[in-house]
Amino acid sequence: MSTPSETEAAAGEPAASPKTRIRIRDAEATRTRILEAAKREFARNGLGGARVDVIAEKAKANKRMIYHYFESKEGLFQTVLENAYLDIRAAEQRLNLDNLDPRTALERLVRFTWDYYLKNPEFITLVNSENLHRAKHLKKSELVAATSRKLVSMVGGIVERGVAQGVFRPGVDPVQLNITIAAIGFYYFTNRFTGTIIYERDLMAKEALEERLSFNIETIIRLVSA
Amino acid sequence: MSTPSETEAAAGEPAASPKTRIRIRDAEATRTRILEAAKREFARNGLGGARVDVIAEKAKANKRMIYHYFESKEGLFQTVLENAYLDIRAAEQRLNLDNLDPRTALERLVRFTWDYYLKNPEFITLVNSENLHRAKHLKKSELVAATSRKLVSMVGGIVERGVAQGVFRPGVDPVQLNITIAAIGFYYFTNRFTGTIIYERDLMAKEALEERLSFNIETIIRLVSA
DNA sequence: CAAGAAAGTAACCAGTTAGTGCGTTAAGTG
DNA sequence: CACTTAACGCACTAACTGGTTACTTTCTTG
Image (cartoon, rainbow over all chains, first blue to last red; front, side, top):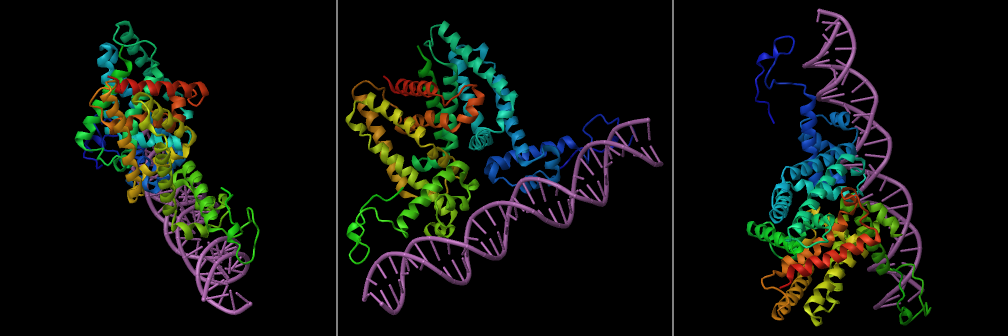
């Protein structure tokens, strides 16, 4: 929020400030604050329900700046959404599953996906909002499609290795597997409110979360086992 | 939609038209038209994005009637949502799974759930919208909770019989199983737009749908098999 | 059949909300 | 230190939108 850094070297005419210098006018920082505030607001209320004024206020930026950097409310949403996808895809790549044995790799992916949804609930709501709008914003992003391709091929690689080692059965479509891994976590979280009523159980209680994760791992392992 | 039912005996005094009598003023019919139009509009745009004027227009009713029958936009949404839940729960009960052998019963439930989502896409969007609003409307409906209880116990019964017959493994939580059956279908449909981009595949193509359904059945059967 | 009740309508309103016009101020540059 | 460029802010608006007021029409019933 506030800027704790020093203003020291600011005096010297031609820049020369080596460290984090206080910048009253910092385009990058403002842009980032807007993006961060927008993510929260869009996640909480959806694209339609989000209020531009609220985003501006929470970002401690002027509303005019939003239109300056992102053109429109939808332009802002598009950027937020694309960043969200790139973030999870990047995190998945960092898992380095190719070095693990197939079973462990798969379990790790299931666990990661679960944890990511749990710790980044905005992701789920953003995706839901985008689907309500028939993916019109995501369609414009070639980058997301490209990085997703990597994920699918990574899972494909795991399955292949598993089959080669005789621990996985052949014929499992990596795309279907991927969808299933996402589904069993995504559904649980996105419907946690209605789910708590339908199943008369606090789905977000610590034990409930642990139980579900175990169940999900079991589901996936049984699905691919030879 | 239209009222095919009998109005005949209603004659008594004047009127006396025996068949589908044109009724300029029909409270029940108007209410139903509003409900139907609202379901579509809420499903297409969510609670926040739906427009009361549009609902009135599509229902061929005056906007004032909406407030007359449902008090508010949210009141209308609540009724639409509750009806949607009651409808799927009733359809599930009609499956009569208790008379089938466990494996067939489970497969039939997976297939039904899938088909229901496919043929009633509004259900999914309504549920999503409700979760965006933290289930504040569904909380008020004791009826939905009660009927859902029946579903869970029905699945519980199937699992028990399966275990008794030695075809299912013991220890499978009916609630988790239920969630998983819903999840693997729900996720696929709710994210069909972003999914088509992410997985670079038309998820709604005929073959894709068939393939997914088979995969889902396989997933569930493997999950419970002894 | 009068009369009240219920169904239906049109015009309207007050509060919002995405988006802008235009002026101000800070930072980089020769 | 002029001068240009980019960041920033205020105040405004045109269009919407949920909800309502006041009124008309049709049905039912004592």
